[in-house]
Image 1 (cartoon, helix red, strand yellow):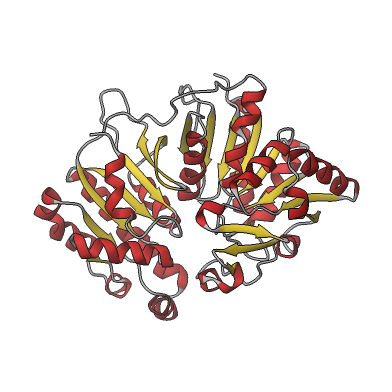
Image 2 (cartoon, helix red, strand yellow):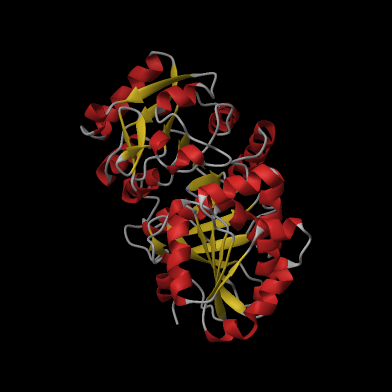
Length: 425
C-alpha cells in the first residue's frame, strides 16, 4: 500500500472535516480514531489519525501527536499534515504552535505554513488577520469560547506567542500572483530566519495556489482548506489518478438520531430547526450534577419515537446559560458530565437500532466514538462543506454504522434535517 498523505487532526470532527475535503478532491481516505496498534489493511491514498488533543495539556498533546506521526511514517506516508480548526482554536500557550514545532523537529524540517483559511465556510485570512464571515475572529463568537477564547485575530502575532521560531506573513499581494510567487516568498522568509509562514487566502483559488506551493514541504499545518490544493501535486507527479470515485460507502441502515453537545452559534440554529420538526430531549447539566440518571430517562423517552422518525438529544445552550453552568459546576466538571451522558445515550440508541447517527461538537464526537468503540472510519459523501458522512470500519459480517461528525461551527441551519438524503438507500 502506497499512502500519499498522512494527517494528524487535533479533534474528531476536525478529522472528518479534512478527510471529507480529501475525498472530495479524489483521494480515498480512512480516518483512524486514535493511534492504531497495527496496520489497517485498507487500500487508501490518505490516512488520518484523529486525536482529542486540542485542549489537552501541551506535553500530552505533543506526545500523542508524535506517536501519530511515528505510525504514519511506518505506514509509508510521503507528506504530513497537522490539521487544526479554521478558527485556530488555541491559547497563548498552545497547542497549535508547540505541536507543530515538535512535528517539525521529528521530521527534521525547519519551515512550514500555518493557514486555517476555509473561505467556503467564511474563514478568510487577509494581512495575517483571520476573519469569520465579515468580522475579525476576535469580534466573533469565538471570543467567548469556554475553552479556547480567541481574542486576537492577528495570526502572525498570536502564533508567535506559541512558538520558539520566527513567524512571517505571505501577503495577499503575493498569494494572488500564484504558486511561483508564493514559493519565492517562502524562500525569502526562510532566508530571513522564519520557520512559519502565514499565507493570506480569501478564496478557493488562493488555497489551490498555496497548496501547489507546498508540494515540497514535508509538513503542512492548516485547517482543512489547504486540502483543496494538495491532490493536484500528487496527480502532477503521476501518483494519483485523474478521476477516481473516492466517496463510496458500504450500505448502512437502521434508525436515525442526532446528538448535539456543541454550544456554537451554528449548532444552536441547527438544534432550533430540528426541534421544530422532530422530537427532542434536552440534557440539563444541573440534573446530571444532582445524580439523576438523565441518560436512562432519555433512552426511555426515545422508545417508540425512534421507530417513527429521527430524534434529537442535545445539551446545546446559549452562551449565558453555559456560563451559568460553568460558574456553578466548574468548566471541567460540567463538560465531563455532559460528555459522559451523551456517550451513554449514544451506546444506548445504537443498541436500540440506530444505524445512522449525527454528532455535533468536537468534544462530544470524541466521547461518542470512544463509547461506541469506533476504531476507524471510511469517508463518504459531503453533507455541507467540511462535513462528510462516514461509515465505521466493521468486522466481516457486521453492518457498519453511518456517522456524521460535525464541527460545532459548521453547517447550514437545516443541516440535521437534510443530512439523511446524502446516504444511499
